[in-house]
Length: 405
View: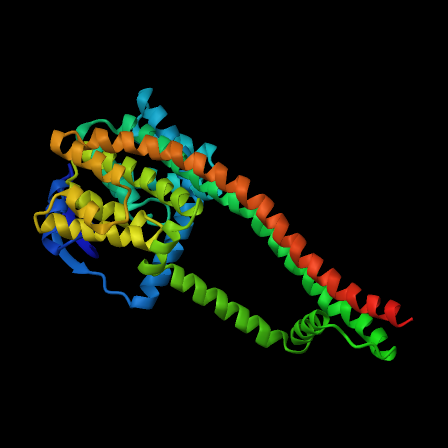
């Protein structure tokens, strides 16, 4: 799926046409023109947006990070707008009301949306340029809701779905944050002891001509490297972290992450819950399954899952069934594949996906709670072992002095 920039003409009541410009995601220029005609626009020019690979990758990651941070704000916006539409308020008035009740960035966004709607754009068309706030999935679902006349209900459902996804992400981040803080604190204590306290003790022992144990020598060498070559140590650490993150983003290593005890199943179920709920909503909105897969794939955080969904889309184009493709990949649980197969055969795939989303959301919560219960004592044990080793390295030479005396 590529990004296309278009110029189109829209008719007005005065008879004077207005030119509209924008960007839209599609598989081909033909699909862009067809989409524009469905929106009541007459396409004049469609060009593919070609960006440098590295610049596009950086821009995409930045956009994704911004959207993740704004999930709660978008959910609040959709929920408030859906409630206002349900009470009979017009779309423009609803956006203006939300602009007055929102914070600075959200308020500016609502006023921008209201301005575009006031000039004849639909809500989906107004949302599309704000890729740092709304995903292509949100735009597609809202466009289908506008066509079916169920915009208010759909916005409320979208808000609930975003809230569930943000809740799982927050739970997982909270489960990992406390152990990470403990380990960082422990590393800081070890660095302080090895660079400040232990060298002073070593100088006293050297004056007393006491041979240092091997553990003390190792820690002194570690502290000496930090104090004498901080730039090299920092560079090596940054390279190690960058290499680790890069490897973990590759499909092969991302698959290993999903197989890790406790953390892997929790992460996979949380992502499958969000993907299943989104697919169910897209299918109910009338979007084709292959197109729905294409919209959902970029929202997945794990590279192995993205690769599996991309392969599923290719298999569907080749005529294979959904369940066959999922089973061949070997990444998904047999229960997941079997439930999808039953839903596909019965023709109730949207309802099946919705039930799967609820099930995986509940199991993901339990897995994350179990993960938190395991990681906290594990981090404390690692911290105690690290500090204990440093203390032993400091006490061992003192024992040698006692023995000599």
